[in-house]
View 1 (tube, protein in one colour):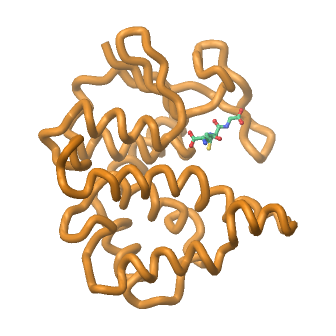
View 2: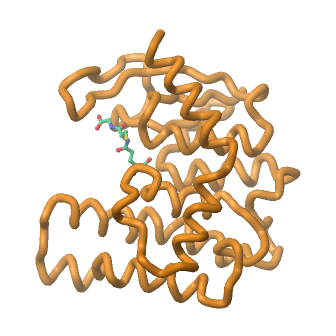
Length: 203
Ligand SMILES: N[C@@H](CCC(=O)N[C@@H](CS)C(=O)NCC(=O)O)C(=O)O
């Protein structure tokens, strides 16, 4: 039994799109929960078993999996036929894990600190900054590859490109990075997930 706890138009929308890419929607029970929103709407939801009250959350046979990148890895491992993440022992597995972890451990914190206007030597030492984040993408895509792992689209592309869907002004200037962002954001699964979210919000 697989249950996905989701709040429309939130970080969990990426997981909804991933489930669509995986062809796994019919294998997952989707439960819509509320979260506190920045505009003051919403609020914690007693029906959400996330230890911090957040989304996304996945529960598989009673086991609770939290954090977007862990959930993405869990799902691509669980549904390997979709080919959205290299398996253990397969070429690209290390790169795949690295991009997923880098997103959660570096990229997202860097953009959050930047958006909050925070600067401190300890933040620079620990995470570096926006310029270094952009340089990682520029370097990785400099050989003209279509995706972070090469020719192969993966869940790492979905997660790492996702902030640029919310903040188009933050897309790095490098043409190859911009083309990669466009490629990732053009996935039909994202438009589908957005429409699902719109319908859920309207309801
Ligand atoms: N690092 C977490 C962040 C999750 C997160 O902050 N989700 C927000 C929605 S965008 C949330 O649930 N907020 C509810 C709250 O702060 O109580 C992840 O990526 O899973």
